[in-house]
Length: 104
Image (cartoon, rainbow, N blue to C red):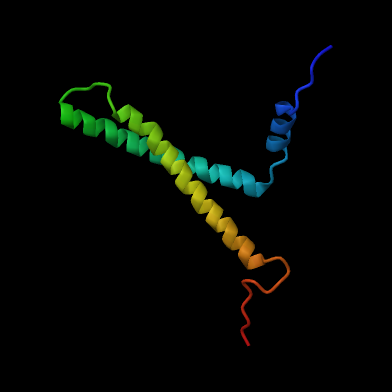
């Protein structure tokens, strides 16, 4: 007799990726489109700066800086996108007059 898992990760993964709407795909594309160039540029800067400091190419703390820069860029863009979504929901409101201006 085979034991059943409490939560099937296969079903969750399938539901998550195959049923995403355009807004969610746009959010992922924006995050990737921001994180990759920022990581590349900051990594390139860190490696060049380390070479100028040392005078030779070596492996050091600059390679620890690159994933930290990627993580920081990821958190920054997601915080920005969360704020944008909150502004959209505040303008739309829940049927009330929140965010609606009266221009009489």
